Image (cartoon, rainbow, N blue to C red; front, side, top):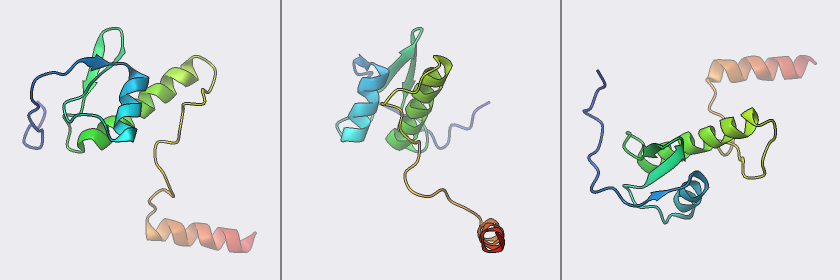
Length: 103
């Protein structure tokens, strides 16, 4: 059973938007907190997790990337899921720095 203690209750369901429109609305800051995005085959996603709209944005970008990869082409709308450098444990960074210095 899912832990519902960190889930937030959303108000009435707004009109359902497409995957690309949903991503554009969230990126543009115009998406309501209760946005509902249709991802195909009648399935929808909402910003009901702990990370809200940012968590939904990551899921939508990941879904779009999987759709693009499965079709055999990378669309220009596919962007990296995270901006900047990935978080790295300091020990891993030290090992990679040592390897870079050796070779």
